[in-house]
Image (cartoon, rainbow, N blue to C red; front, side):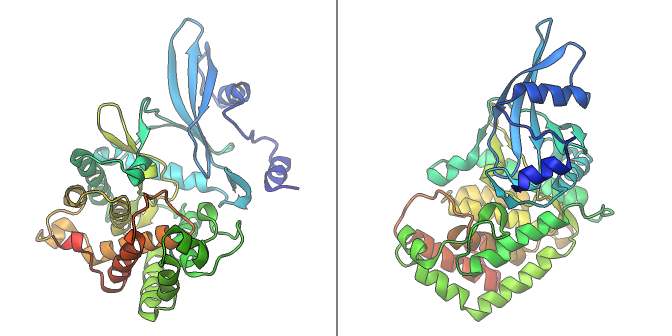
Length: 374
């Protein structure tokens, strides 16, 4: 019996939703009280998502009015491959994140509003940004405007300053954090394994031959990195720190797949399913890593960092950011994306991956990254 079949047999009250079954979606939304008296679901459109079912639902009233919302259901398997387990109860951590962000208006302004939640069916109903586009195009020649980079940095700064030092809630994201740790600090440094090995959305890391096919010399560089004692010890130490409960609320997956460009030119941040308490430097380092992977101009990275971190000579009490720690987190995210399972659709350029991999090694070992020193 498949993972999904076992779940449905054990939890017949939880309707597994799909965008191609608008009637079932209408039934469930009505059952949980999310429809008006004369309102019904007319259409559903999948918004993708690897680990959860995410769809835009259009709701229409009999008298002609209509609205849209985003419906998200997070169940204990990977949406794109139901044989891969995902942490049970991850819905709780995401709901908790939205509740915390709602108390920080400057950060909440950059995220969808949580309109409703239903624990029994692992559902979230979220504000819809119609006409928004995913910024995954940055990896294939797209450009991020300075203003958008500044807005992303401002979101992180507001999140850090608005949540640090506050009483920490129950660590509802503990299992998702452990999964993130495996994808970042373990999977890239193991030999290729079978899919479904517990590394979640990333899957198994490519073997060295596959890496060489991506860019000549990359497999050899990856093998050397895995046997580099100074590097692996630094990764292990950073991974232990990552697992600890930190002082600020962090998004946990701050990269272009979770950045939306809205029609007015603004940006929004979505999908905080890995969110929880940790080092604020983790989000900043992850965002910076992806700007480097996407080959964005130095001015864009500088705009992002200026808004997120502040000037290098700012007083520590005001800045509160450990720049070497930002560099280390950026380095390990770059390594994950270059030699781990979380491969990105990067444009080919001779020597780019090998060169960036060496930059990432320096960042992890020494806490130095040139863009952070300018």
